[in-house]
Length: 212
Image 1 (cartoon, rainbow, N blue to C red):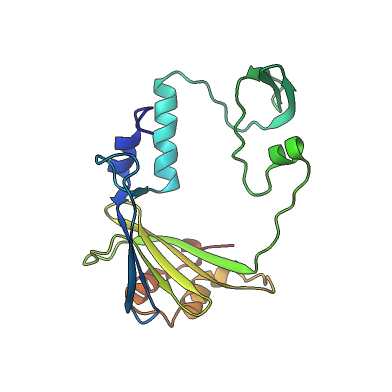
Image 2 (cartoon, rainbow, N blue to C red):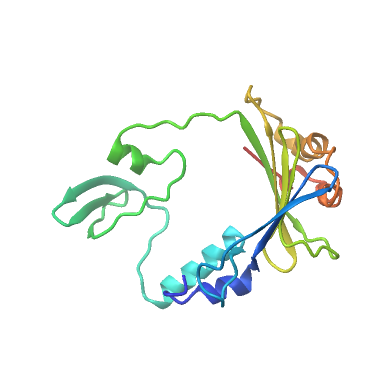
């Protein structure tokens, strides 16, 4: 990222950190993990940033370099030729490229086209997520509360917001009503202490919560 000139912009928009704390559900500290600064002393071990902020930075950089990109278009054909890849698009255009990168998710159609069908397997886990306001007195850069079969993690993504991720076993794969997500996340993780009650208390609307 530094080589293409956006590492410092990402660091400014996100939240850099070198440490990750683990605690039990009662907020008893267990261990602190330190991430190595693989990119050199100028950059932290990791940087958390919202997807939207990262997307905005990447789009601005691509535009500044006059890199063409189109939205609302999908790949309809892929043909490997000598030292290149011919790609046909749903808008009727075609192109030849040196490299094709597929970032179309767990149900990737491009992966299926290239390697054959490979359906994902349900792991029996459910994840609840929300973006919330950061605790004003929190000095912990990143923390994971680990309980019996459950986890509750808080990751600062900039100076004012955190990304909450909470996981639990869900072997039967039930479909919960979307209008009850805010009540269900508070109920399912009510046993967690530490910062958890503060963040769960912010969740008052089902639209704040993503569930998979």
